[in-house]
Length: 283
Ligand SMILES: Cc1nn(C)cc1-c1nc2c(-c3cnn(Cc4ccccc4)c3)c(Cl)cnc2[nH]1
Image (cartoon, rainbow, N blue to C red; front, side, top):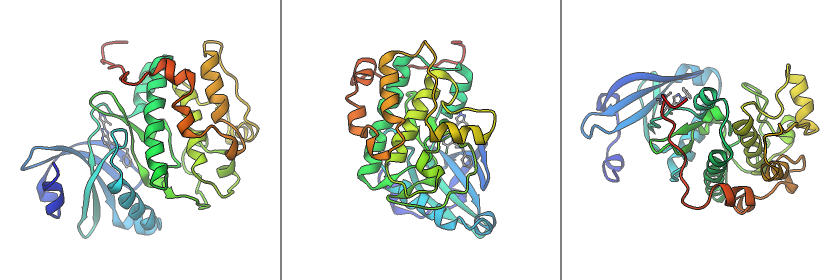
């Protein structure tokens, strides 16, 4: 609630710790419950030593200051943070159904109506971020979580920055979602999130990212020349939208606000349509 997460400074003794939810390079995320209210959260524990060694302190600071300020149903909340001599603790919203990455692996791919709903909600969250001068820069299934109403939530703002930015990228993790301008280390802006929205739409519909290749050099080439093959089960309208997002020139990409008016979205994800519930037994 409003007042308790405002008044006090938190400490580890305020929480009962549960099972680990995920392991990251700089620390793990645990299920946790605030003792007084029994409110369930995800506690992201980062080791100061690792952060200082990797000189990403400014990145963590930015993740905190950005995510604490963002309030949107499709953005994972950060309620607060605290630290002790060895660790930093981020108090995050708990997303009951885990990561989009896991759900996609389990279901192989989603139908067009489901993907259109996820893309509609993600677009609304990105419009909100961009209005606050925040670009996420790392939209991919691993960084999307699923809430208790099966709604999509953008998480892990570790890579977000204030636009415009030309920060050198240490290319850790997949190349699949990088835009041509980021790969070439050119200055980039909000339009990188529009590109990755197109990559995500393809991956949720097909089950593989559009520039998937046997090695990173091939992926690099496919991205730079936007070499994409659409399977024949993809509708013309879906192809039309992706074709307007996956454009080399950032200025020519479809603005996010127009994504919400694209016929593939308005016909498959009308206002009020909610994401489907994927029960584990439903295979
Ligand atoms: C996993 C999982 N399975 N189920 C059923 C729910 C979840 C769940 N996970 C989360 C998680 C969560 C977990 N890992 N990660 C990735 C990670 C881990 C360590 C450092 C950086 C990033 C996020 C969160 Cl933040 C917030 N809510 C979560 N919910």
